[in-house]
Length: 275
Image (cartoon, rainbow, N blue to C red):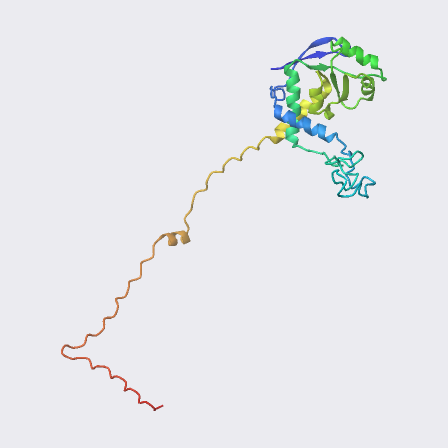
């Protein structure tokens, strides 16, 4: 069982909390985390880069010199890629870098990143993080009291808290965001993850509810088989019918002995010329 230290609002340690085994089971899937980081960084690209090929560079319509007789290599335009000021060969053009991955893989990647930080002891819980007004010194003092000075810290709040975000905006090694918006890249970027306790408990409860919904439904109990009752139709159908007696073929009357059959008369041949 993995445990995480719990700190108060003043930055002092108040105890430890056993992390739920359903979510923090030590699973760290590095290939899925790598894919999630690639997808995240690809989706940050605007894809507005553009270069001019030789068809878009102005000028170069006239042949620099004649084809033969100069002793130099033949040239057709000064806007070819090998000329200074010419077009760019195989340069980048505007395109869309958007990628996507299945939702279950995203959840697995984020879960693996949080498990990795929890196993390192770099996942900390805070009772509450809330300021009445934006003040960078307050957030810096809280992190210093927790012993996180000079480290890259990711602070995950319970919902959107504008004052906390504005307090950490001027700190180059601190990133503040709601827990629901965190991605695998943010967790792996940081050295330590500080989570507000309310956001953590709500997330764990939501994951448990999702797991209960994804569980297969129990199979219905089999009904007892009904007893077969024989009716008149089934009884008559069950009793075999008597087979019909085959009739013996009628015998041909044999001719009396001594009598010979008369030979069949042959047709007379037709004479030539007769119709």
